[in-house]
Amino acid sequence: MAEKKAIEPKAKSRFDTLSTGRQTALRRARENSDLTIPGLVPQDGQDSNSSFSQPYQSLGARGVNNLASYLLVTQFPPDQHFARLSVHEDAAEELGEKLTEVKTALSRISAKAHLLLETTAARPVMMEALRHLIVAGNALLNVPLEGTPRIFRLDQYVVLRDERGRMLEAVIHERVYPSALDEETLTACKVEVKPGEENTQLVDLYTHVFREGDQYRHYQQINDHIVPNSEGASPMDAPAFIALRWQAVPGSDYGRAHVSEYVGDLMSLEDLSKSIIQFASLASRVVYLVEPNSMTDIEELNEAENGDYVHGYADKVKALQMEKYADFQVASSVAERLELRLSHSFLLQSGTVRNAERVTAEEIRAMAQELENVLGGTYTVLSAELQLPLIKRYLYILQRSGQAPNLPETIKPTIVTGFEALGRNHAATRLNRWLDDMKARYGEQILAQITDPTEVGRRLADSYGIDAVDDLIKSPEVQQEEQQAAASQQAAMSAVPQVAKGVMDGMVAEGGPPIPTGA
Image (cartoon, rainbow, N blue to C red):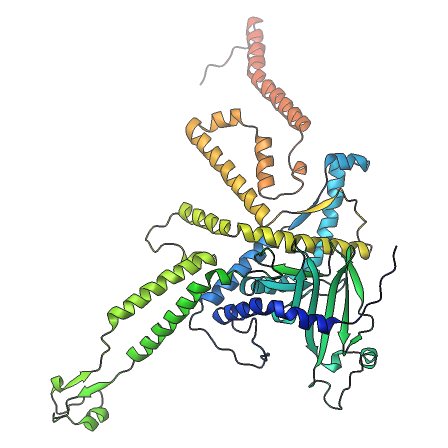
């Protein structure tokens, strides 16, 4: 094995160089954030103490949070594994094991990998990563060997990709307090800390990730010095740093956000919402006009209590009204259409169901299925760039810690949620509809005669993502034995009346006691 080359600390210079190619993507991300969740991607110079401008509508924020929650549940279901280890029967024979035994062992390893997702508190991190993907289109995920994963915003890192979209290089820029660094790091990196300012002054920390051969190497840098014990490496197929994109743009280092595709509607809704709110504020003012030459005493009107009598003429006092109701209706109608379109885009089903007295369940199911189909392309990108590298990373961590054996190349993880689950849902829907149509046309008895319940059960179990279905379904031998036993029992029960009748007939023929005919 070739020795690793010594690392030259050039993280800061690479960050400054690659920042130029990030400007357009970062500008769009900040504009999207201002329209949806202000501060998610802050402007230059803003921090946690800054005040962010609030939009006049909340549909953008509600849509982002709803879509992120929807994706989190479909990509990482709490009651289901999002990936499983697959093996072909021929590969199992080469290992000298039965296919069922190999699948059982792989299922246990897969369960350990998914347990890491829960025990390392990765689910909140995935939720935040999805929100950044929807708004900014990009995020960088760090999955260390130990501890909780981290998420970096687009303004915190730069990335470089090859012609296939795979990460070539990434540089992360953070600002940390000296108190968060140990004495060895402070000394080696020549960090000067003024007394009493350990938690006030900030230090620039750069993390450089680059591809070298068939692995990714990384290190950290402060003041042109490498941070002690910060060097590391990870395999290319199980990287410690995963550069995520919402929509892959060919030839671009950065992805495109979901919000960017509907930014026109969001901007229009923002302007209309501002106009409607300002109109409502003006319309809510109560101002009375009194004819100048009238004898009405304005002070007397102001001081009058409820039920008092005052001198004056009613037609000399009129309320000031804005005769703009027709214009208000136009703005309100356009805003409602924009909200409907955006509700479709962000899977807000409550805003897409038509306003009618009777909305059938079938109509709602069809609408939900249509909304899920919108995310087909998104599922594909997230499956290839988030789920698959993540499960490989967790398997690598288990192997490094000795909790799982090294698996042969013939055993590969496959994703079973997201786009794959969407396809299986379609298959289950088609199968159930076919069974319902057959039962309605020919009857339940005919359907039972022409269909195989075991095969139907297998297909439904596969569509619903149920593992180890063979353990749930009885084998053909067991089914045949039970059928034979049931047939024998039925034959025996049918023969009992005939045997009893023969015995009684014999007793009568031999002069036995007469058969009672009643009271």
